[in-house]
Length: 298
Image 1 (tube, one colour):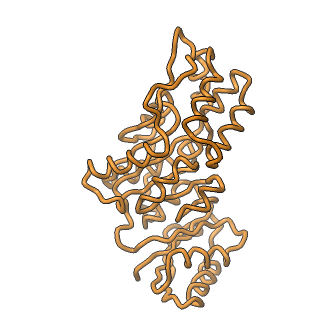
Image 2 (cartoon, helix red, strand yellow):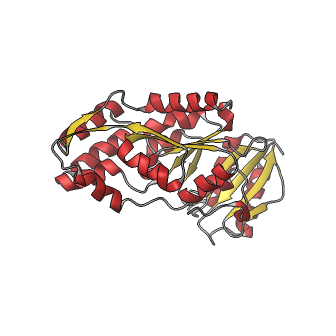
Image 3 (cartoon, one colour):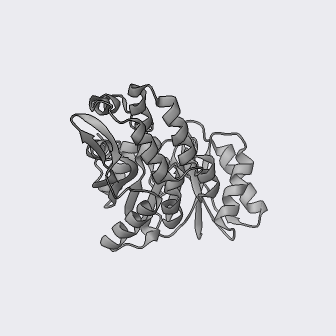
């Protein structure tokens, strides 16, 4: 079969009748749909298919699934396992927007979070919005960074994603419009090989209200993907990218597997693959990893 449709749900929410219904929906559209193959019992399964475009298979699956908490990702059968992982950090590898959480210590969380939401949905220019938000935090004590970090939570499945891909030879990197103060710590905790982000400027133990140039934005994320692929001698088809915001969209669309993670509406609508229900291990299942092959991580 030329393609694989992977269905992934929170553990226990996927069953054999659901797989049968989705398989029947593919066949009704003229696809040659193979026997479902469990990757993780009651959580993830592959349905091989041919004779149908990936976007048609995904649409058929979503129509069949309705409101069920099941994600559907279609990939080529060949080259499923990616050798380069490039991940956004805020609201992807970690559960929050670190800049918004820092703003809480200045009493500006709701105001700054509103700008963040608009920026991540593509309504505002990312660079201008970043400069504006950081400028609003001028004079905030540097201790707010540490306090924000102490409250930051890693997204479920992130450790397994990095540990498993790294163990199987993939180069793993964070590329973020956030800040090196946080990306460095996240990279160290999870085992990313590298991290690329922006630098908050400090003066006398306080935020200076500025970001060092050059600012890492949407174009820089795509450029980082292309550079890393070239450095590792890989085609873009061998890359997996994941992110939630409009500044991630270019790298999501360029990679062999680009996954919109709990994405903003503009991103979810434009990405070829998205995960709305399962944890980040869904990105491993989409590559054909079985539960027994997944490394939980430290």
